[in-house]
Figure 1 (tube, rainbow, N blue to C red):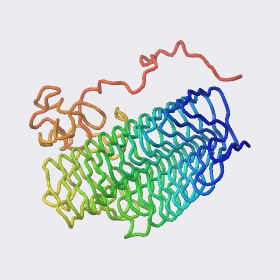
Figure 2 (cartoon, rainbow, N blue to C red):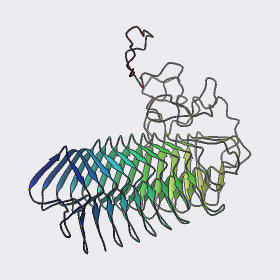
Figure 3 (cartoon, rainbow, N blue to C red):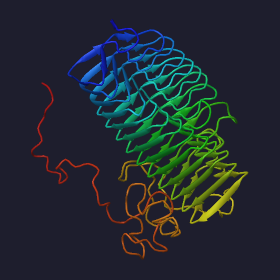
Figure 4 (spheres, rainbow, N blue to C red):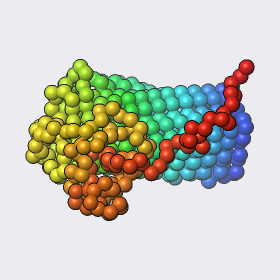
Length: 474
């Protein structure tokens, strides 16, 4: 082990240019009050690049440690194929088990791994990364089994303060906001801007009886989720996948929210998919499928404003009763399909529920929307193209060409469905110019023709396997 006092266990860079490549940095620590950078300190406008390297089992502590492996302050940091494994930030408010960034620092993370990093303390923040301010961009990276510990751990994967956080083509898997009231198992956003695209947030959790936001909790600022899958996330309290409060604004586009659960005491845990305590939610061309708890299996709106356009909400409960939408505030539903295969209610409402038109609902529980027998709906989620799985409409479905023009091609929904397929191609209008009677209800647009894309290509589509050879070991 290497110790260098309170800052930078191995490398202390103040304003210089440092490149670390093909290296291992392990078992180093910075200790003392307000210790920072267990392995590396980068400050003073410095430039640090870490490439093809591993930072393992580094530690910062004890009373208030920040940046178990790297502390970046008002400087530039680039991580390329860097692995951060089992690093820890200790203290009453341990921040950034692997990485701490603040004071408008700039961080670029490419093709990197954050695995089993930990921010300890009464309020541990950012099991893998604490991002106070500045800009942090993560591409093609993985955040797995990181944890923010303590009585109310925040952001098992990433904690974002007032910064800009961009996540693209990345994975958040089995991260934990720990303790008696963990929040934001994958991502916590205080008041910054968070953009998540083409990514997967799977099996993240917020622990404790009042755990909130199994995958994401945002209490201010702007959150946008697009072409992304939220699967199997869990909150012991409310908001299995997503919890919004305060002044948070959230847009969800072309995404899948599947099999998330608010798994607490029956009657108290709410919002298997999304819990909207306050703020604003807009979701378009998005599927909510098989999310669970009794009150608001897909969405529970306590005190915010919610609008759903071209969404599909489906539940097939096995053992517990479910209500897909539970609204106590203001909610508008347009061009959406709501279906349960059991006798449970699709909607429960004590607030203002606005029928925006073009909806198909399998019972009469959603105010102002008559009951409909929905035909030609595939209850099995499958890959029909695009970034996420969908429930397909089958030929002859009464959802085909049944949407209103409003919300079809404008009003923030866009002119494509969840998969990115053009809307309105099978009706009376020209492709790319949806007209009345052209667009389908829900997140999926039916087309008798094959989709104009291939998800996978290996040059063997013709079936010719003559050039294949056995590459297995003898």
